[in-house]
Length: 328
Image 1 (cartoon, rainbow, N blue to C red):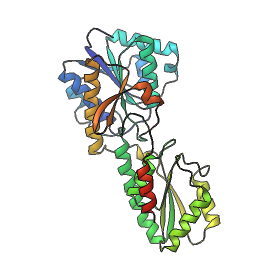
Image 2 (tube, rainbow, N blue to C red):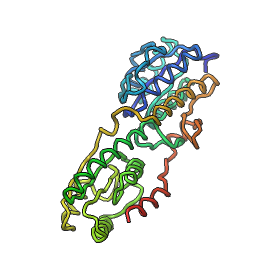
Image 3 (cartoon, one colour):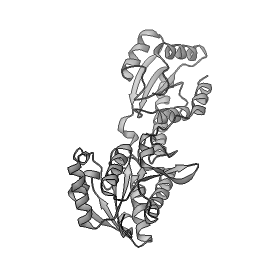
């Protein structure tokens, strides 16, 4: 740890998420407030190894708080996973006189930052940016709230055509390992069923549930499916099974895909990013390192990076119960 931190580097890595630009802006302006230099690192760990650095100041981040994606770009790097790659990165940081790093991303980003800290004793601080909300140590990751709003808007539009044609729509949302987006957006969008990796509904039970919905008078249905759901090999297999085992429904599939990552961040994500960026910079100034900034009980708190990486974000059991009741 340097005696006094004077220059902080900031980068984004992994999948982009709405709110990353707001977090970059917050880090840069917090540095300016505390009379620190701030260096933007383009293309994540790849740019770190190649010395792709750009000086940033309070004016260089104007007009980005409302933009999705990341102005610093993002890339995945196999080379940084090697000791030689990390050595290159350390040499570039030393050459530039950077004293600490703020890494914005998910568990892969944090794993790289943690190993880098362990090998070189280099101060690092993480900010969770991923729409999946699958990081331990925070109730909300940057981009999660915006993604939910995007999905709910899509569900509302799809429901209009589902109701008009007596259709059953399977809507696939992101969530390879966790069902936070599917569960929350499914409830908010009034879905008849929500399929998530944490709960194995089973094909027969799904069909039975849809039959009950028909008997209760529903002429159309929406089923929200997390991409990591284990019922079928994929959402199209679900469609085929329901086609074969239920009459009276015109079954359609809509895969929302990467549209969930894009768009202007919500007010919540902009405020959260601003709070997290300030906390990251000020925590480094306090001599703290190897932590992730997170939101717990509406307070910005620190969680050790190893816990953030190894811990599992848990599905909200109350929301599961609410979902069952609302699908009646």
